[in-house]
Structures are given as structure tokens and as C-alpha cells.
Image (cartoon, rainbow, N blue to C red; front, side, top):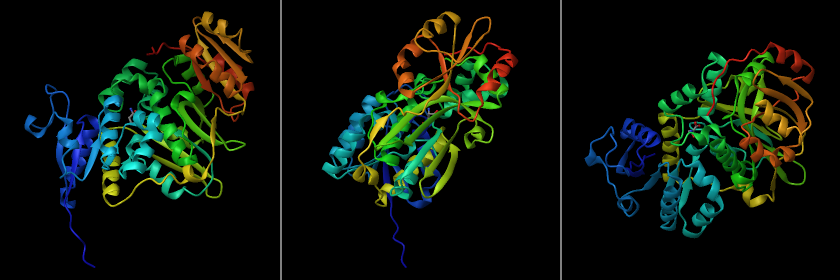
Length: 420
Ligand code: HSE
């Protein structure tokens, strides 16, 4: 068989952490016949690893260049990214993006643009960095009903939580390290407030269940209000706190979506997912459980995911959204009763307890800790209020017996860790 040689050119828009990652991966693979044909950046003054002559500052030079086979959109500004992706798809081009906010918030339109103009959009790098999540859900599980998909979807928050547990470190310095290592978003509140993981969860919902849901509709909490008391309590219970997103098939064609800091006991596959790693457990009705783990953030791991999309797209791969074509599903927060820890200053927690009835209460000199049971809908109703009051919220799974919690509370000896 004669193998056809080809030379393919990539138009790169954005040369930050992920753009540089893609560049390095492509350079290391030049023998495969790829090259970066053009690089567009915005800021002329920013110091970069390549000479100024390597860049253009006019995005139309990339978007209008017929010699380019594919556009890699890797900028952080979601508004500009959407304009770029729209224009490229309207021209029927093939585009690869890592921008989870853009994809999560605009997926119906982006699918329609592909159908109308014949272009292609791939975005594997937008979910869990280097882990081939979307390809697995789409191509392998496209016909299998899924019981549940749950996982750690944000590397920066997982890095911070790992530091808090392992070293009882300071929140701010752990976040600063995640930024220095290139894991965090340009606006790191997206990482710690759970928004980034929420975007990934909504993207996965389309591929895993055929559900198009806007992130604003989903129950979610971040780790920005975490306290040392919560970390100590988790330690005393033999757990680690992880920010866990889950999608679960519920009754009547509904899919339950939640993103919550969660006490994860030892023995759970997510317990060992540390630092910037992400982990995803997929449970198929017939296949049973599978677990995927890998680097969820960072220049080269994410650049590698973009590169995988670039190579696949040029060979003709595109998402077919198999479940979107066959399923009629709607979103819910779920109806399984949740046990949650609420933690905050005494005065603020006391205000909330007029609305929510506690099962267990514990008081330290400056923090109130409360365990209570409620439905996801009730938690969602109070989501904005809890966030405004600076309350840390974490789910405690049924596998952690409630009767050991009072004893665990008494073992906690809090050291201030700071918060966002
Ligand atoms: N800021 C993101 C994270 C980058 O920490 O997971 C990868 O999506």
C-alpha cells in the first residue's frame, strides 16, 4: 500500500499557555508533515518565546488565508473567541477550540452553524485537558445508555484542594502556584468558583446524554469559601474534599446535573486524583464502570489534546452528537436527598438556619459547622444566598456514616488557611 504524504498548515489564534503548548507539540512532530502556518496574537508588547516577526496582529489574516487547512482558536476572551469561531464556521472552515465557556454557552448555535455551512468544530481540549473524554463519550458510548458520569473536571481547584489536605497550606499561595504552573484561567475565579468545571459538565451532557443545557440552569458550588475546619473534618472522616461534577440518568428522561465540593472517602476512584489531574468515572448500563485519569490542565497536556483534534479533523473526524439525534431529555438537579456540610461565620450560618433545619451543629470560636439533609432543588433555591453569605457547601455521601461526624468534629483543630 502506498502511503500518501501530505503537508498541512495550521492557523493559530492565541499564543498563551495552550497556544504555546500546541506550537511545541507541532514543532516536535514536524516530520509528520504539519506546520504552524500563521500565528495571530493581540498584545504587541507581551514578551514571547518567538520573535515579533513570527506573529500577525490581524485575525482576518488568519481567517481569510486559503492556504490554511485548519484554525486553532486558543484565546481566553470568550466574546472574541465566539466571534472568531462563528466567522470560521460561517465560511465552512474546520476549527478546533479549547474554550469551554464559549462551547458550553453556545452549543446549539455552534451545532447549527456546522449543519448549515458544512464546517467542523472540535473541542476535546475544552474538557479535562489531555483526557480523551468527548471522543470516548461520542464514539465509544454513543449508543450505550449511561447510568452516571462523574468526575474531577478542574485541575486548578484540585491542585489547591490537594495542597490544603497534604500540607495544610494557604489557599492563596496554592492558587498562586496553580497560576504560575499555567493551570489556572486568566481569571482564576472561574476555577475556584466552579464555573470552569460547570462549563465542562454541560459540554459532557451533550455528548453523554444528548442534553443541551445552559450552565446557568445547573446546581453548582465552588471551593472559594473553603475553611480549614472543613479540611480537618474531611481528614478526621478519612475523606478528601474534591470538586465533583456529576451527570446521572434520572426518571422520565431527565438527567440530573450537579457540581459540588464533595467528601470523597478512601477507596473511591476519585480519592487518588491529586494535583492538576482530572478523573472521570463513566458507568454504562451494560459496560459497567470505567475510569479515565490524566492531566487536566497545563500547556503541553492541553496542547496535545488540541493537536489530537487537529489531526483527527483533517482526517475527516467530526462529532455526530449521536444521543442528541435520538434522545429527548431534560435537565434536573435530581431528587435524591443530599447530606451537606454548611460552614461559615456563626452569625451568617444562624441566619440560614431559619430557612434550613440542621441535623448536627458544631461551633468553633469563629466558625459554625452544620450538617443537614435537603433535596438538590432546595439547595439550588438557596445557591445565590449561600454564596453571597460566604458559606462553604460540601456534599457528604451516604457511604460516610452520620453518627461518626460528632466525634470527627471534636478532633478538628482548625488552622486558618485563607480564602479567595
Ligand atoms: N483552568 C483549567 C483547569 C484549565 O484548571 O482545569 C484546563 O481546562
